[in-house]
Image (cartoon, rainbow, N blue to C red; front, side, top):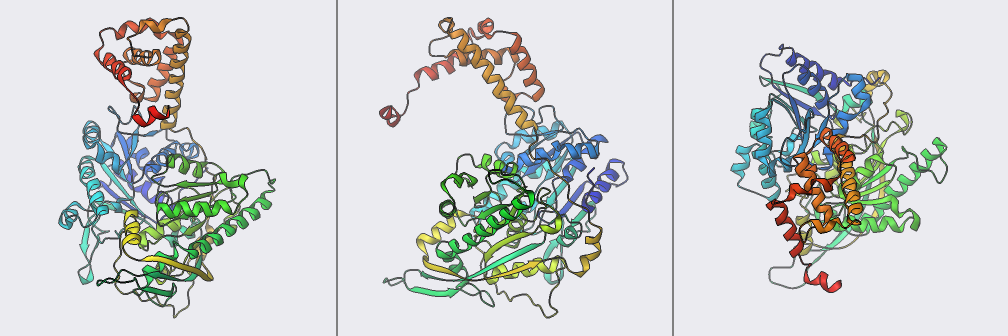
Length: 631
């Protein structure tokens, strides 16, 4: 039987008080949970209590990335938590197909982009039912007033404001709002959508955690370590030096050669970012990647021996490597390097997940749910919310030095893997460039988790530096074309340091429980829908093949195939297309198709202008000139 963490228990007590009418007018809950601390169960707890009490009818869970929709489904489908909580709620990963996004279930999961693409569809759903609205990683959404005042400072800000505008009406209509975040600040300094603010000392605006009508649940990294919800982190800081060509002089002439400059320095200066930019595109990157690769291979060999696995076996729990690249071009170069370090038969254990790569979402799912791939190279797709406990090593080959971004990246390796042995034997290992910007982030992380530190330890001094939006890959490529030109770099010394719990965590660690096992592959509603749609398609195709052999294809309009005609007839019989059906409707359609022949229902297409138009489109279609030539 699984037990709740402290923040999960706090959230449960709050929603039970709301459901019982004991919380006054409280309808807003903010859960600030350290990355990797386990936010995914909070929507399940809230929905189970509020829907069960009739205060809400459905739940809508909004996530920042498409790859997180299936993970949200799995949180509701997890059989161990269904048994422990006694709930039977199911949600589906919805697209923007017409009709009810829930398809008869207790709710649906969508993305910021999905709501922005079809705001009326989601607004209509919220007007029909009282929703519990869960906004995941709410810090991505800027307050609209500040977004308007900014006037479009950059492309990323414009995109974020475009998400805030259609989500704000849903927040207004929701019966209860649960806002989740691993950080309560934005890199650009703007306020976060919907959150209350107050003016702190020095005139700085900060989230008002004591605002009336709000309940706040906090879960710090120190607390998560005490409860063994996350792993201690070991950092491998690699120093190096880099040289590059600077911008072309205004009066013309040759570009100046700058460097070599060391990455490691007491404080950031004007060469820090150019040196880092160069290092990630030249020899230094290969050196850091090689160290991360060897550390992963050593870890997997050690765990393989502990498990007694045969050489040809690939059990779960051996540990995986996540490589975070600065842009897509470098991600592909890193993957090529990795493939040269293994025998040809093992290259299938490595994969690439970037936005321009076909099947990127399927690659992410395989990395999470199967033993292979064991190495994933990405840019930004997997840095936030990726629930892959087997990730044990991260190669942080990224320019980004925003604290929230780095916290999310490090958290990919701090999840406890129940298949990897005792908690005490696990650790997160992060290899990174040893620059002063990363050093300051590491110091803050160390301070916040109660790490044992020397009394005279002080944070590195950090003067004000412009922070470009490194998440926009186009910016990095433009800088390379128009600004500096990387020449060379090399790795120097490696420093290892481990952030472990300090003395203040001893009591919590003594009472912590062992990690629970997790379910790897669940039949979520969206997976069930896809399987049933495929089965329906197979049955339709089988009938079309059988009947075409009997010469029935002559009975349909010229230009139409029997398969398309049968699909159209099935849609007329059932009253809707397969893409709009719920799981129950798809199962009923399979049962009907098993008892009936579609050739007996072709009369439904007579005089049907929609089908006639579609047949003409297929009849008149011609391949493009290039394809005709190749044919």
